[in-house]
Length: 72
Image (cartoon, rainbow, N blue to C red):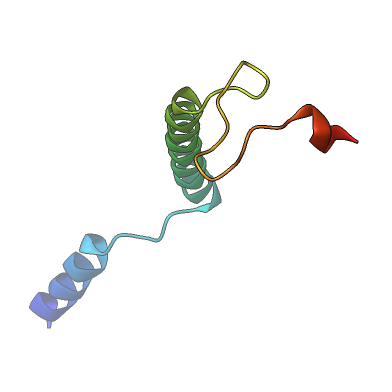
């Protein structure tokens, strides 16, 4: 009987409790900061490869240059 009680107590002690709100919040915050960092890095890579509007960029391959006659 004592062995069973000791076994039950050891089994309960070995079980981990679920994380509380603060632990879950810290984990979610860390994940969202990591995701934000990844998004910022991706945007920086994308923007670095694109010419800035109005910076003398050439028109896209399918577009024709604008002529003075088209402005009317």
